[in-house]
Image 1 (cartoon, one colour):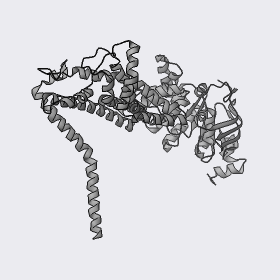
Image 2: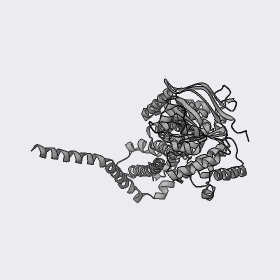
Image 3: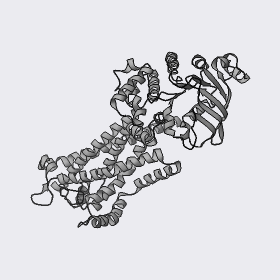
Image 4: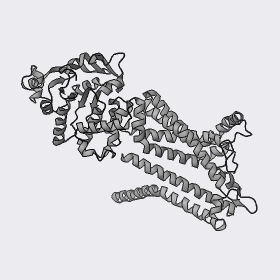
Amino acid sequence: MPAKNKHVITTEKLNLFYGDFQALRDIDLAVSSHRITAVIGPSGCGKSTLLRVFNRINDIVEGVRITGKVFHGSDDIYGPDADVDSIRKRIGMVFQRPNPFPLSVYENVVFGLRIHGRVDKSVLDGIVEESLKSVLLWEELKDRLNRSALNLSLEQKQRLCIARSVAVKPDIILLDEPCSTLDPMATLKIEELMVELKTKYTIIIVTHNMQQAARVSDDTGFMLLGDLVEFGKTSQIFTSPKEKMTEDYITGRFG
Amino acid sequence: MMRRLGKIRDYAIEKMIFISGIAAIIFVILIFSFLVREGGSFFGEYDLKNFILGHFWYPASDPPRFGILPLIMGSLVIVLGAGILAVPLGVMAALYISEVAPKGLKDLLKAGVEMLAAIPSVVVGFVGMVTLVPFIKTAFNIPTGLTALSGCIMLAFMAMPTIVSISEDAINAVPWNYKEGALALGATKWQIMYRIILPAAAPGIIAAVMLGIGRVIGETMAVMMVTGNAAVIPSGFLEPVRTLTATIAAEMGETVRGSSHYKSLFAIGAVLFVITFIINFIADTYLHKNKEQ
C-alpha cells in the first residue's frame, strides 16, 4: 500500500477552454491518497469539468482545449506518451445518473475486465463476488447475477456502477454527484460506502450538497466561476474558512 | 347564420380528415380482398400443393403447369444474396455515420444515402444492365451476365438506404451515458461499438434489415432487367433466375382476363402479400421493442 498523504493527483496552472469560454482558471491542486476529497461550488463553477479532466473524459467534447499540467502520481496525464485507455482504467468514474449497461449484473461488473483482456471464468467469478461485496450488493444480488441490470433500483444501480469501477482495481475513483438522483436513505448508504472504500482507494467527489461534503470528505475544495477559491481540510473549510467567498457560500448567502 | 356555417364547415373538415385517415386501411382491405377473390378462385382449378411446390412454371403449355417453386427460389436467392451484401455494409455504414464520421462528412453521407433511395428502380436496373451485366459475363466467363448475382448486387444498392437510415436511428437512440460509462472504464471506440452500441441497438437494426429485405422482395423493375428471368430452380448465383414479382409484371400483359393463367398471377400476388406482411410484422415488433428500451 502506498504511503498515506502522498499526492496522487496534482494539477499545475490548469486552464480549460470550451471554445472561447474558459471553464477552469489556473487551478493548482494536490489530492492526497486514501482520502475523500470533495469539490463543492454552485452550478456552473467548473467542478464537474475539473473532475472530468482527471480521467480525460473531457477529450470527447468538441472544441475543448487544456493548458497546464495534470499528474497522476508522476505520470503526466496530458503528456505526449499518455495512454488514455490505461489512464481511464486506473482512474475510474461514477456518474450522476446511474448508467449500468443493458447487460446482466455479472456482465456489468466484468465489463472493464473483458475489454482489458481478462476472460478466465474463475478469475472473473472471483472478482464479481469481491467487487459486489465491496459495494455491499453481494447478498442482495448473488442469486440474480444473470438478470438484467436495468431492473435494479436506482440505489442498486449506482452501487453496481461503483462495483464496475472497482472491478478493474483503479487507484482513484471519481464520483460526479453520485447521489443527486437518489433519495436521502439511499444517499446515506452510498456515503457510508464511500467511507468504507477510502481504505482501498482515493476518492474525489463532486457535489452541490454541502452537507454531504461535510459528512464524508477529509479535504474540500471550493470552486467559483472556474477558480479554485480555497482548498483545505474539510473541518477547516467548514468552520473557519480563510476566504470571504467560501464563508458566504457555506453559510448559504449565495449558491 | 355565420355560426351555423362555421359548424357545418367544422363537421365537413372533420369527416374529410377521418376519411383520409382510414383510407390506408380501406385500401389494404380492398387490395387484399381483390387478391383473395381473383387468386382464391385459382385454387378451385389448381391444387395449392402443386402450386407452391411444383417445379415447373409452364403457364402456356397444354395442360398448363403452375408450379411457383422456381419463382420462390428465385426470390429467395435474390433476397439472400442482396442481404449478404447489404446488411453488413449497411450496418457498418450506419455505425460509421453516427459514431465515427466528423460532422461535415456525416451530413454529406446522410444526404448521399437519401439520394440513393431517390433513384428510380428502372434507372438502377438500366445502369446495372449496361455496366454490371457485361462485367459479370466477362469476369466469370459465363454465357450471360443476366444472373442472380447481378440482381443481388443491384438490389443490395436499393436496400442499403433503408438499412442505413433505420439502423442509424437505432444507433443514435442508444443513450449517451452507456457510451460514457464504457469510455470511463477505458474502452476503445471499437469496443464500445460492438460491446455496447450494437447489442443495445440490435432490435432497431433487425427491424432495419427486415424492412430492407421487404424492399428487395417487393422490387420488380430492376430485378427483371438484370436477372435473365428463367423460371428454373437456381443452383447458384451465376445462373439466371426469375422472381415472383418479375413473373407478375412480365406476364400480366399477355394473359386473358379470367383465364387460369390470369388467376395464377393473382395467386402469386397473394403469396407475395403474405410474405411481405410477415416481414413487416417482424420489423414492426422489433421497432416497438427498440422504442420501449
